[in-house]
Amino acid sequence: MPSRRAFLALAGGAVLAGGGAALSAGALSAGGLDHAGDGGGGEAFATPLAIPPLAEGRVAGGVRSFRLEARSGLTELVPGVRFRTMGYNGTFLGPTLRAARGERVRVAVSNGLTLPTTAHWHGMCLPAAQDGTPHQPISRGRTWTAEWTIDQPAATLWYHPHPHGQTEGQVVRGLAGLFLVEEAPGGAGSAGLPSEYGVDDVPLILQDVAVASGGRAEGGRVQAPVGRLGNTVLVNGTHQAHFSASTPLVRLRVLNASSARCYNLGLKGGGRLWLVGTDGGLVPEPAALERVLLSPGERAEVLVELASGTDVVLRSFAHDLGMATGDERLGGARDEFDLLRISAPAGAPAGAEVPASLPAPEAAALMAAGLAVGTTVRTFDLGGRSINGAVLAMDRIDLAVPAGAVELWRVANGSDRAHNFHVHGVQFLVRPAAGDHDGAGITARLGWKDTVLVRPGESVDLVVPFGKHADADVPYMYHCHLLWHEDQGMMGQFTVVEPGTGAAAPAPPAAAPHH
Image 1 (tube, rainbow, N blue to C red):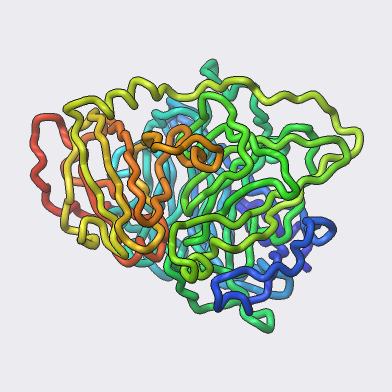
Image 2: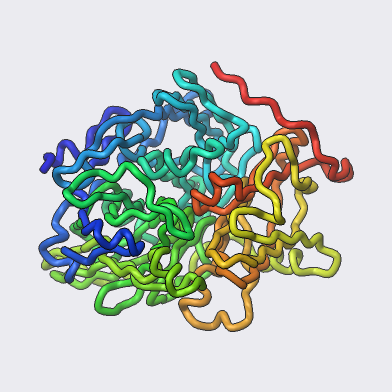
């Protein structure tokens, strides 16, 4: 076993090597996880949860600056098993970046890999030229710098590579990190929510990796209808993770950074999770839910209440992806497994209360605007690996949207596979559907989102307000965030243009310059 010091190497970044919880690879042929070692959380879940280091950058000249370097290496994620990994400022995962609304930020991203990469700021509302898509490649040995002003409410966002056709391979090897947006000083703040990073405000990056029989890192890809599934689950690179809490109320910022696996979060043995935030920020009031389902790319902020001297176990439960029974098994929807044991020490202080309401971003007026008569309605039909019958062409712009517009995007899944739908550069609202009255049904419909699950036969209406960053030459993207589907070209491109300039497709954008 590596030492705790090996888990956290701080040199402007992190090597997050966990003692991963290896589950039998024998079940991988059926797409499932073996359940060895998860029987109760208990003593098996004893590896201290690694916490990604917090990077707050350097402020000079009114700009908060960060530096990231994509690197590769070998990391022992599972006891005795070393993986070929990638990370930012280390060999696996990356530091948590944090900045406030209204701040100007600059992030210099260097490529220390042997292949091209990009750096995409998932969930960030920013100019398309700074978005880190395949149109802003970073060649080996080069540095790309993105700069923008943060203009959105407090939220849990993340960053990851987005090279066309190679996103899955880079993300699953560890190129991912959180980007926390806070309210400006004197703003609405977090309304009494836990906010001490790594103490009562805890990041959880969920990933699955593959371990072959005999304890070898699996280099190949097991393909299910939804994409690549691993048989071993890590939290912040830690296997069978344990978090020792010091407060009776803990805020978990959960990111599904897996390529294809969904996580249906709940507390083992019962109890509720208080959902306080979704992809784009806080919800109007905490919602007590038994389950919170996250598809790849989605985030949720939940509160967990702890009693003195007790343990709770965060677990992923079986769920419904709407596919045929065999595909459900292959897609991991029938798997159940523990993720994290949380302990409250005896004598821990009591009395923390879940807030009755939260300073959520305004939604009612925009929802009404998106549903008003005369609103532009666009339809997106999700096929097996296509959108509206087409796969991505880097030189094709699929649509242009006027800056400042509020549109209704109707996303329908006519295939037999589960998909999700992510839109760059915006946060949207999901129109409530008939029957969304129970906790499980409304989970994905609360608050601001940038990624939403769409099951086979399902249609969702998205109210999408577009920003003021008009650029007829550089597109944003929309795509399935199941990364194998994305790499197969299940993507489209749109530009945001000055109102009144028409929707003619511009010429293909030029590659971003390097320095």
